[in-house]
Image (tube, rainbow, N blue to C red):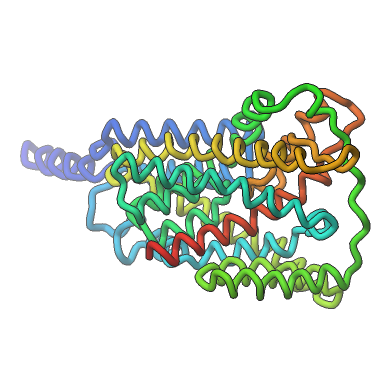
Length: 384
């Protein structure tokens, strides 16, 4: 009888050694708490639920502690999660996301007022500002470039660049980029109010002109050629962005455009969110560098907002009355479409219930998408 109980006890202890309870560390508990918080923000506060639900659940999946060697974890060769993560590590998912973004984006506001593209360019100050700070803090140039792209407020671009320049930091950079994208309505308004006067917030802009279909088609083709000729290394993102937009605007490929902006982008968003979340495995994720990346990400968003708003204020010095731009659209130069444009609208309505800035803000907003991809190409060219 004693031998039987010893047999059961030994096997029970052996079984318990392979459970998550036996392999759990304080790091796993911290990361699971963060994952639960992301899910809470997505469901209760409706902060970017399409992003935060997959990422939050992915964090939970990635931090179920396990004994190594059983092809379970995302970093273990041959595991299912590792195969799915291949699309992140090799930059496959981000161009597919850009294809969908292009198919759902109307560039009319930008085409009708081309100078708005300068605001999108100015907001990329956040990228190069964070890059400079990261260098000063001791990160390598490649790591600093990958971290800096967070300031573009573009998750897919951040993943694409990090996979090329600093794959070991990819999880922290991706989580930081998507977290701050979700927090755009929290981060940007205080900066916008601080930098603008009451009079500036009341500026009314002329309605954008109607843009013809042929203009949109030409813009998709010319935009791709111009940007990729200048920055060929940005072609995976820029080429797919403008291709998706051509599918939308050509008028003869509606089915393809609907697929790109619907089922395809939804599937890729699920995969990229889940695997990026799972990559935050506590044993590899919780480092001082990861903590530093979150701090730099917040700084880059503030710098980007500063750059966009201040650029509009400077441009207004050279514009006649009636042609001036409302500086509140400057924040929309970051790539978080359409959230940062909505922030422009919401803050503007606080001061004038009849002054709708959304359509004007969409110009710099879509310019920010192009600008962040161009900036990524520039950094890749110099740092890869």
